[in-house]
Image (cartoon, rainbow, N blue to C red; front, side, top):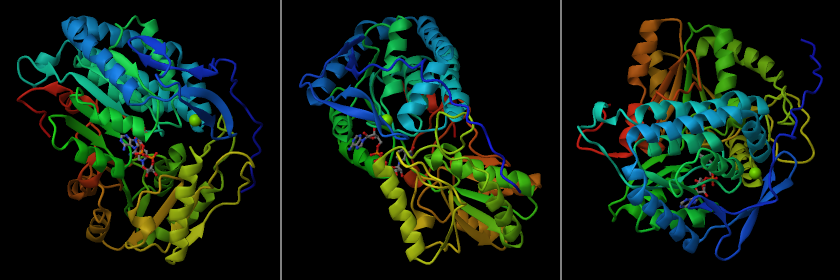
Length: 484
Ligand code: NAI
Ligand code: MG
């Protein structure tokens, strides 16, 4: 097929009003960090510095936790549930009104295509606030006992792959349940969280209900270890998740941990092949593969493997990689130099262990961090690229002969976050879904999200669920837990 030439259609940056520097958001105000330290956040597509961000240390964390505690005892725990719901609703509306601005800032700070921040990240973030606004005054009827109580002050630590969306997953249920929060965004993507702090001001949210502290892993650890935190909600690497679990093990703090994944995307011989190919592409190349539930292990039934691979390669040749601000772009920049290094390192182990690498011909921009869409065939289950989370646009392809062998291979992982099943037969889909040990299972689709649907994993993918009624239970003290 000949190449379609696209005229570039860049989104304007004019709407993004990024300040030269930001302080920490504590007690409803932006304040300078006590020690005056800062770090830079850059645009990974251009390596341009976007802003100077305050670096919070132990002293600042203490101030933020005190502010959250005081807001909890004096204001938020006394605010009628119906009023809490109104604040959440107001925040959701403001996110919708300012959606374009948020999408542009998210893309500049993160490197993801504007099409994705515009159509996925920001609308879903607003949807989480709308959904939880509805729950605020109905908690007594949600099956958590007569009078479920908030846990108190919650420390929340989020990653860089879906910055505003992960903030929404954390803050919306916490506030709906009556908690106050101290949230730390990731060091490479703090901007939309700081913009969100302005939204809290705009919505008139009482001071101290939401506090945003920026910094790195040391800042995160200080938050985890603060004695006046009642619960930690974390999304990020399994390694840090385990460290958090260890450090709170001798305390009364509770935790939800949403960690990594190595999802199997299972294509049975009776699947609708063209649709499955779209699903494979969406499963691994959405958001540059920086997705904990990415379909990074493709398992194809052997008799359709050649056809699938041929069609997949043709489809991959059409992926447009480059300027994330261009509305035509499919694959944007890798979020950071460190992440790019990690993707290179694990991919090279694939070459060394004998798998075969393929990427379509594509020109990568000279500035910024880029990785071409890549597949490895001839992968065996023992290869690192079949076991470890690469968190980039790299797909490992394995085959199976019988459905039972497919399931066995799919479950042969230390993770258990998500899985995909592609088959024309409803009975086969239901059978396979029952056998798969994964928290989220998609059938004939992939990477679909909804605030009403609980998300979370088994094994090393973490503890607890986020979203839906199950997600709320993690923010409530109750004798009754949501049924599985
Ligand atoms: P990370 O787990 O280090 O970072 C996630 C968040 O945790 C960031 O806000 C970071 O500042 C904070 N953090 C780091 N160390 C901490 C500590 N000791 N205590 C408390 N908070 C801490 O993830 P990183 O290094 O950015 O990425 C490494 C790998 O982790 C990726 O290649 C990917 O495989 C995986 N990952 C998985 C994510 C997911 O959504 N499940 C998200 C981000 C990374
Ligand atoms: Mg950045």
